[in-house]
Image (cartoon, rainbow over all chains, first blue to last red; front, top):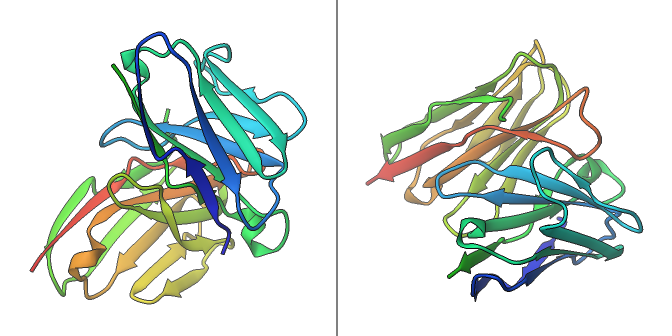
Length: 118
Length: 113
C-alpha cells in the first residue's frame, strides 16, 4: 500500500516562533497532498491542498500567510506554522495518493504531528 | 463544515458483538472511504467503495456503498478489543475536485471484554 510519513511526530514550541512540519510520500510520487488539522475528539478539517510546483489552495477561513505550504518535490510537502500561538496547538495530518491504479482514488494519511505551543 | 452525518457518535459494546455505523448526506458521492484512527495516530484506510450498491469486505469488516449514492454503511462482526478506536467515513462528492473528501464526525467504538 501507499506509505506517507510525517516529521516530526510531535513538537513543542514557544509562542511567536515558527514550526515546520514535513510530509513525505515514501513509495510513490504525489503531485497533490492535503493538509488537515484535528482538534481533540473532533473530525479532520481540511486546511489546504498542496500542489507540486504551484501555489497551495487554501480552504475558506484558513490564513495562507500563517500556514505556509511548500510542495517543492513530488515526494515532499511542508507546512510551516508561522508566529505560532497557543490556539494553533493541534494535531496536523497530511494525506496523499499514488498517481495510478485503484489507489489513486484513495487517500493515505501520515501518522500526524502533534503541535503544542506554549 | 461537515457534509456527512455519521452515526452513532459512540458505541459501547461487548466483545463478540457486531457493530454497525453509517454515514448519510444530501449530496451524491462517487467514492466512499472508511478509516480507523487510534489515539495520536493518523487514520488508516480500511475499505474503499466506488460503485453504488458495492459491498466490500476486509476481514471482519464489511462496508456498502448505498444505492442512492448518498450513504454508506460499515459493519464490524464479532468485535475484539483491538477494534477500539474512532471510525471515520469519508466521501468524495461528484462536485468535489480530485482527492478532496468530506469527513464524518466519527464513531467512537469501545469494546469491553
